[in-house]
Image (cartoon, one colour):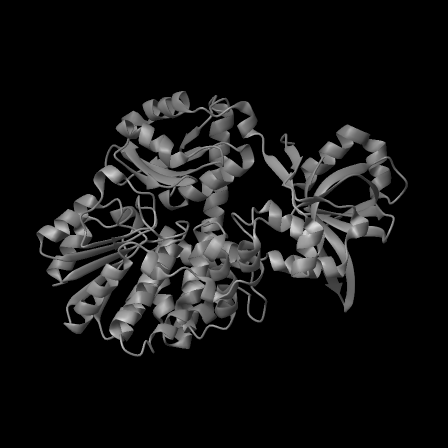
Length: 586
């Protein structure tokens, strides 16, 4: 069992006063304070924010200029090509720009790089193809800020270039585009730079509607139909659910459930989510991975074609294909993860601060997924690399921990890299195979992380005895949704809870259901969905086999659990009861 550092938030406020003012429980007020939501304006936006509270797209540097250029090109019937990316953010960005420009009468086409053939982002092959097709204007989305060379190539061929992106900026080599739109450009006036590429594209489209109808602005309301396509990648690209992102996802989930997009409806149905209330979880772990799967194992064009499909039967067939690809991706990820862990455990790499794993035969599309799972297991920054299609080069993805800025680390080691990009928590890199060991050593020599940075920190929102749980409290917890990165699901905790009984659930005894002592409710059910074998080993080591056997038999025992948990209402055959989901134990 991995060591954990449990801490209770110590942020202060008058929780009773906040609760009375906003008609919420002091527990909810405390959770909101723990999210650094301070002051009446922020609290009110957190609890009651609407689409009217989104930031003015005019504040996004270059967006007005880009929209004006697009409007002129549409009116003059110039050929426009949208260049996207092969992940969910890139696909949705492309959909937003392509559909809006086409709706407004533009002569527009789209292209998405293929992961293995092209690599990430705009490149000279794509530029040359656009020139051969007579394209006048290229507009990128979710890429382009690091494409100075390809942009220059396009300009030399007489094309207009608009870049829309959200990735970190390499300020020494900004592309010389006709309009450069990225909230992370130094000096940009946009109030919140944590938006995804699809939201950047959405902001540009909003201004484009204004440009195309200066007198009545009757087009402006049409921007709302793109809300689901801005919300979904906000979650899948792991943007922080703070500020306007939280509003976008909150309202985007509702719009997603009621969408009239035939492709999305088919994917919802094939994913088993029809007639269900959707959450950010479904975006991040069900719908999003299906859209991503095409870009990983086939071509992201398949995902975009699904979103553009007008025929229900064709959409259903495409959705079935994406779900199947995602299932295949899951199996490949499990196999790759097993090999990666074996390499870390046997190659003397466990003492490295930054893990660098090289799996030459791995499909490069799952490198980031494996890196993320290794980070979860070891709480170390990690790069997972595989052979590139170019002789002598390797490429892959990195995932980081909160204490380590991965993009800055790559800038310090850029001499070993052929190409890199990303942000604080994730990155993509390409390097020569013979530079791998030097790169690994340089990363670790320059890394300033300390041993305590590798111990997972569990921040408990409220130490809450089980007796305080009620249906009303659970109802109010919905006010915290949507939860995710930057607005984590609340964590409650209680120490030394007596266990009255336990049993395995599931066909392979994968999970455990406990009955915990509760002086108010008598007992309360608690479910642990983690590694049941590891948990039983822990309990046996601490209390002994006899005591654990007595616990499993429902007999009095000395077994207690200190837990972090989340409460919920369980419904079974019309019966409602309170239960908790255990997230951590000790």
